[in-house]
Amino acid sequence: MGPLKWGRTGKFSIQKHESGLLQDISREVGGFQSNAQRKKWSIYHLEDKKGNAKTNFSLSNIKNFKKKLRYHLSLYFNGDLKLASKVFDGAIWTRLYLPLPKKSSRFVTSDVIYLVHYPHTEYIALSNFKESARKYLFQSLLSTFGYMSVKNLVLTGNHLHSLFQLALNKKAQGSFSRNQLSQIQNLPPSLLRPRKRKVCEVEDDPNIHCYDKGTKKQKLDILESQFGPHEQPILEKVEFKLETRLRGADKPQAMVQYDKESFHCSVKFEGHGVLEGIRNLAECGLADLPLPNHLSSMHSLAKNHFVLKDSTSRNKSMNKTKD
Image (cartoon, rainbow, N blue to C red):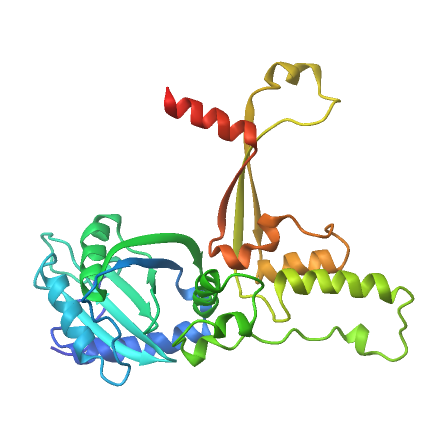
């Protein structure tokens, strides 16, 4: 059968041979790098490694990885299963076609899942997939990589390198920097590329003088201790969900009756680079230093969705659980 063709129904007719699938992944991988908005990725942590598991797949020979993954997937998915892998920028990129049992044999794009894995790490990235495939997909991946459980880090975004850097920096802890990442053994060189933060053009201008250098230096020292000397990884969105009590003495009379009740709200930061933006807000004086822990340590928490509760809310939640 020839290459994939566009049918009247708006779906592709499936190709029987993997050569076309491999050509597709080669084209699409290049497209991902030039167009980061094309896919949304979620990072997962593989946990509880099996004692005798051999999981360090070689980049120079990924046939073993493909063979093992295909075998475990074939136990759960029907005969239309398609799999193609390619080495790109130090990672194994895999395109999966996992059709669930259905009457039609048409190729459906929502049955395609992308998997990215850096050898010698415990993390994988997955594109969006159907909830109905979750159980068997994860069981196949755990058997392939030799782990007992998988944890969703609640770390999502479009910039794949940054997501992996944030996940790995959680293990290193501390401010985000190349030195922190280099503490992790066997880390692929492609992930050891945090860029040095550029000096502001105003600071380079010899005609502009700062008359409060001491305060400025103190501020920059605090920021470097919290964020490190490098540009922050790219996160397009960070969301905080708050569960807290109303505060302050001057409350409207109508709100007094709810004084002991908690209220819920959410705060979202969105943009090209939220972590770097939060740092810059503090540098410009639009946020007080030192920043609270939930802002200054985001690069070590490996997540971009948070729930903030005060002690009263936590105790109330625990009491409800006991009841």
